[in-house]
Image (cartoon, rainbow, N blue to C red):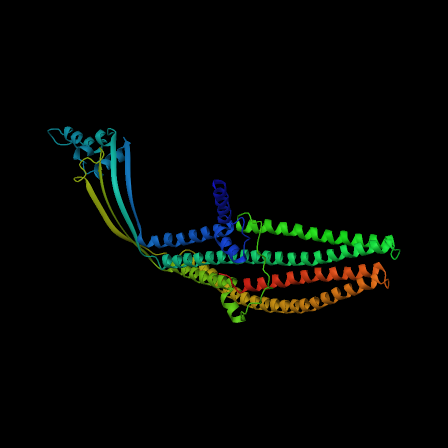
Length: 456
């Protein structure tokens, strides 16, 4: 009983990891969007772009900072400034004691006014501890911050579209891989039927040789064709392994078994208007146009005055936070700066931004025209491939029938083995042609889906 329970538990673990169950296309698409490394990186880029929006918005709230200065100096200007900042300057700092001591009964000599005071010019070294909190706020920036914020929003949307485009590309690659696998398996199935027919033909030829109705060269022709078909099957088996490796890469996990689609890819029913509206390249071009318009607004901000306000409070002493309340000081104010003339640089920048906006507008129109051209091209290619597939299926059916007929006629000694091999070669050729055209048709349908941004 214990052994049975362990086996059941192991089987549950295998099922939980998806090892024993073949992977469906729907499950693979879900795994792709959650585990593909390139998609994860694109999502991080999108989050970084969104963080830049908040960073730009934060400029509207100004800047609050705390500054702590710790200094020691015997420089005359510094020492006097330290004392003045901490509200401890005295007349003695100006050399008043030396000035008074030079007084005579007849008054102050001229030298008292011209002799540099030692206390002022050669003070003792002094410590300086200043604690300051300062707030700066932009009041009006000529709409520059608002324009930059709008640009960051458009950039975040652009990164989102980049991620969507990457997801669409990976979905396209995954779907194509699944349908390529289905076509490979279908072709292998057809070739195995042919191989089985060749084995029957080989046995028949051996019997006819024994009875004297066939030559040894007939057997060699059959065996050569058999080796050729086996080689084709091995090539397709190798292609299946490569597809499994690629699917594993896309899903960032080992995949050894999938459920290949059994139906052909349906042509999506997207109108040209829908595609033009939802196409990611057109959306990106439109966002680029919005960005250039906001850059034009940024260039115009140079013609507006810049207005800002500030406020600060501080305390200072020769010891850290000693008598802080007595030595407090504050400053409040505002500043207006207006660039009146800078050699025409602002005008040139605004003209450059305007031209970039005009250029981007033309690029948007070009993108729309290019998408319309791609739509028409892909639709035409798919219609052509559909006609070729329908024709090749009929040709394959005919080739199969002819081969059966030639096989029977060979047994009746009405035709040579070479004639049978030729018809069998035509049969194989039709199978390979059909697979090739179906691959091309599927690729164009998935490209059409990607163009229409059909996957979300």
